[in-house]
Length: 378
Image (cartoon, rainbow, N blue to C red; front, side, top):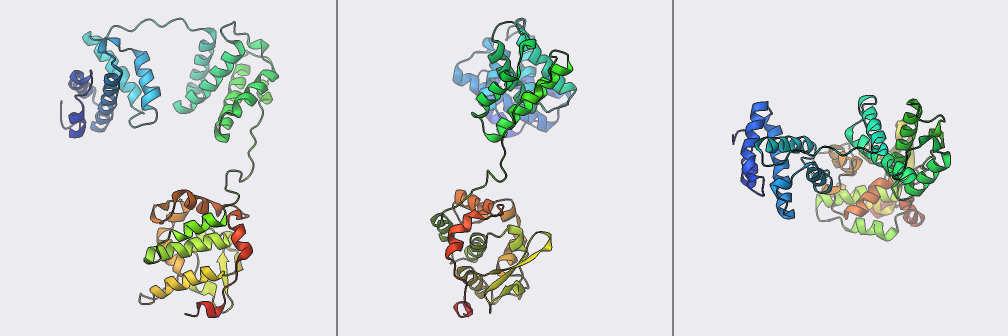
């Protein structure tokens, strides 16, 4: 085995399971075919994982076939690295093992039933004519296979017998078992398949119009309301003894009390805060500027953070934006690792800024008291 092509960690873990004697011949085969070191690394890693799976299940080399590899890919590897190269690597491995005689020749494929033949043709159409990704094709074909199996079973495939009620009933029956995004994939696959049948002349009616729509209410996936005690738990998680904790506390108070967006906080300047009248000017979307009352606790949090920074170089940016502008992705990408809070609560706070009604802060906004000049004079 050429150590230049396979990292030492992979070589060390390679002698595991029944495939360990065949790792080196496989690497030699990849060398002959001109694969890059990174590709060799990924393929060997996939084979090592497959060999470990065989050892756990007690499967021997002579029992290997396409069914065993497909079961490993679908049940164990799934979306784990290196799932992209694994199918081709295992096919190549099976071919090599059959050449050397340790694995029996592949069995002739059993005759495909009419449903399988139709889904095979549809799958080929999506790949060659529509150029869809393999992931999308596999997802769509699973829906179509289920539909055809439920409608026709093992009987004769009579597509002319399809009716709008069959399609509607299938979608209504299965859409409720999926998330909204998966349900939309289901109806998209059904429309595509029915248009394919019409395009191929297998049906005479445009049944794709019978596929019902999946309701998608605006902002339905956003949190409608976050209780005041949950918001308080997020605020209490900030360590006010540290500069980062005071920064986070000020940012979260502006989010919770005023429902501001991250970009609005980033654009804040010192002159946007009217300390004498307890007002704050927000630069929103499209450059629109709005004056809002500054809650007492938010004003105190800003003043506290500014007070700790009084010995630093003067800046035109406010306490929040001074740090947030340097790390705007903290909020805009919901990368909450830098904030000292519960991840679930933080996501709720951060996502709530997207809602125009800012339901999260409703309870607190009802009870806020605008800060007075004397309360933050220190």
